[in-house]
Image (cartoon, rainbow, N blue to C red; front, side):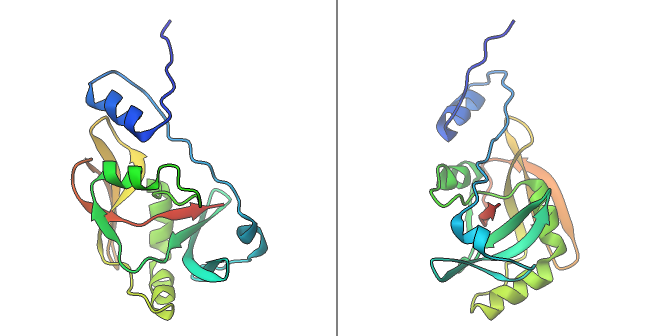
Length: 169
């Protein structure tokens, strides 16, 4: 019988993976529903507001949850470790999308881009985006967004890819 050790922080998981230990894990995301979320009825492409300020765009619905994509000025590029650390313990609940959520987001890319432009932002750049979904101890799933193509594949944690957070409720 194996002893289970609970790894709660990004650094604990990273250190265990980098040391070559045989581990299995799952990422548990707190999908807390904010008061603002419960008061808003959102359609795909609608802006999502917190404290009267637009902070996101309703991008998809998956498994009974609403996915809101952050309305950032320009997505940042970083490696997977830095991306996961950036959103670890985020007080508002922002996190990286899962590979499944990227698939649902892609289906609504035209409406999302239109919402970004209507909010005075640039459309999402076409290219590679990290997901929170882990493929192996050295790779994570990532999505390639193009106007007519979605590729979801695995890639080494150390490569720089776009990062756009989501809320799910």
